[in-house]
Image 1 (tube, rainbow, N blue to C red):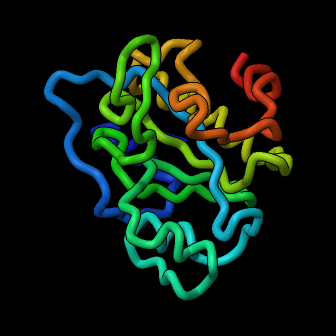
Image 2 (spheres, helix red, strand yellow):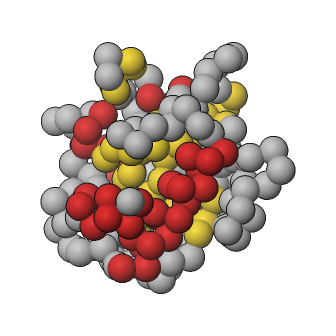
Length: 182
């Protein structure tokens, strides 16, 4: 596994470019990885709904839940599907719109300095072993490419937006990830 020469793309990922990103602030170093959980509709893991959501093509009439989120303009850098497939929506060097109102170590607006990684899953269903393996591999790669990301700088969405977000949820095993990274 490797990053493109400019560090923007994971070469093994299928690319589905999202329009929902912009430039990071000048001189802003990438120093954080935020782990998210997503499934559309909630608790279901098939189809192209996530791709459609991150590319503003989600049909609000296709499912009752979609009517609630239709029109939202969000993205993430990378998705790790249940089968381990990587899908990249935003170059790592760009600012994806994944964190929303957020704060990490008294520093607000985490989108400015974070990489967002979505795991296909939900708060209350276990994630797959291949997802932990692929997540650990990509974290290791990103740390090598962006040395400002320290060992403690991998957090959940719930850590940077407490009370507002719960993902990746209690079903995510942080100790399992830490063992893979050790």
